[in-house]
Image (cartoon, rainbow, N blue to C red; front, side, top):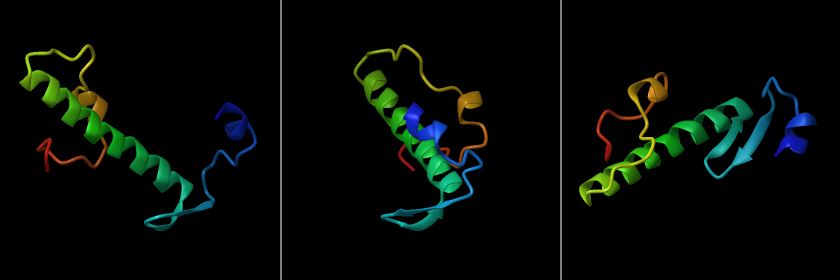
Length: 74
């Protein structure tokens, strides 16, 4: 990843072909961040429902600015 990043247009202004259409690389990274965050929230809730406290659950500040639903399963 580091080698790819070093050789990449770091403005992320280029287009990437994805399974959900051609998107700017900025959009791909943004979607990857919030999508992963949403699944992390779901996994934390599953752990909690079994009496296991996650080590570092995501906070409201961690999710600030990400288009995740208020409801973990939303």
